[in-house]
Length: 402
Image (cartoon, rainbow, N blue to C red; front, side):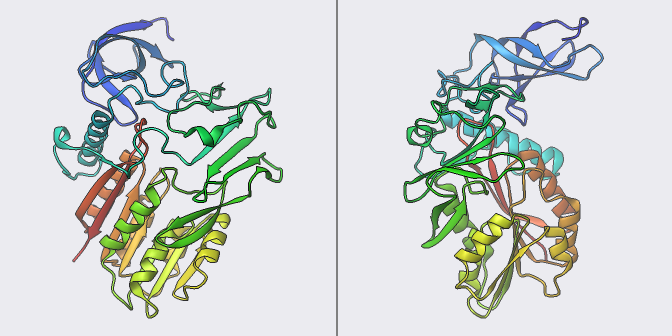
């Protein structure tokens, strides 16, 4: 903390900001306040390097003087100021949290994507499945401290919280993990699969992974098809998300037999399976991902589908090698988004219909703006509360061009 800035402030908060904070102002300067809600008066402690020379400050609400009616007792016993960074909206009534997330997405789309989805005070994320706002997570990765104990990271910190009773996690997922000792510096990957079996895999940089419980791969099922996915590979954390997204992609793709589809950043090929069902034996599906583990899972799960080709490469290079235009492209890029080069390649290929999925509001909004620059229009857009008790969302848009 700089000597020329106060340590604590009394603030009245305004609209929500991307990343889980709300916006307040002090002497004309913007202050991003975590663990607060719009319309509250709070005592906030400044964090990070805060000086009068900076355009904005970051702070944490350490006392709520006038609470919002949407504030509740925290659903997560380990989250909050000084705690784990897991559930940064655990103090918000769940329906209100979905409204906050919708407002953030609407704001980011307007600011970064030059697209008006809806008014911020009318927006809301949709609940996912029937899991509710606690116990929805099926996969988790823990870090290990020097004394061999597993834990969750504190917010933006290398420090760990060794209590593991996070509200996102069902009791069976982490039972007994806190009592064990693990290799210092390791990543502990834990998943409960669709057979109800728990798998625990320890990964240490530069060493072979070790299976402590279960298998290296877990069984996952979507739309009647079975995958065996490495516990260390990507799979949707919310138990109901894979089926929801797969069904939505199948509906929005509007494919017919004989068409061509691209599944970009395709992971284990869940969307490729849905696309292959639609194009039939006379169609073609290309699924691309950089992960070798995901590609192996895709080849094994989709081996009976002669229409599907699995490519392990970057999306940018894979697109450069295509000679046949896709009728539909589905993209599920990492948090940083697809970016200008990939979207420009899709526009140059004149793909008429694109389904774009994004798990970070600002990146998603920027990508939407890039599509619009490339001549695409937003035909439909939905926002899902796929990560309850956190500020994270999943956005899905259909983009078309004449």
